Length: 174
Image (cartoon, rainbow, N blue to C red; front, top):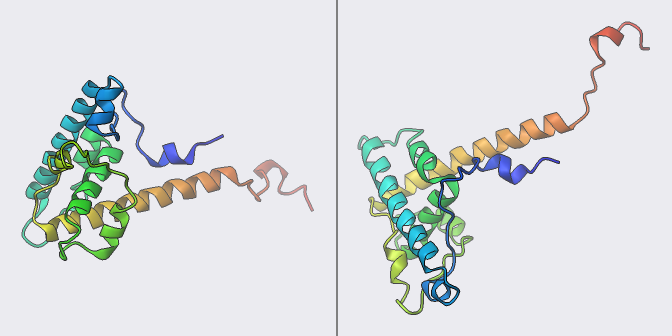
């Protein structure tokens, strides 16, 4: 059986740090504070990579079509989308972000830590200009959706039985 979800998302490299989605208080209570800290550090690095990708690939008018790819290669699609969603959730008041992107970001569960007033989330909030960042998010989502559609189409084609007869039998069947 083919797992469509894993086909859509990149194959996770064993060296990629998983996203820790619990609060620091929870991590401390269950002895996972090191996992929390490593994940937070990776979130900050991913945020910096996003801002760098935007800076290096925005010519003043447009972003290069594949500008998001180096971030995915380094941090994985899941973490990049998590960091982008975090940024939109924290900056939901900013009218320069599209309603569509804001609505998309709300589907992510990114806990604030009551002990710190949620301050840790600000550590991995992207700092690029909101309009350009919104364009980056829209471009990334659109391109990833195209990839998803392409993969799903290929899976459907592979899963459906072929109606064509094999070449050797075409002249025989009626």
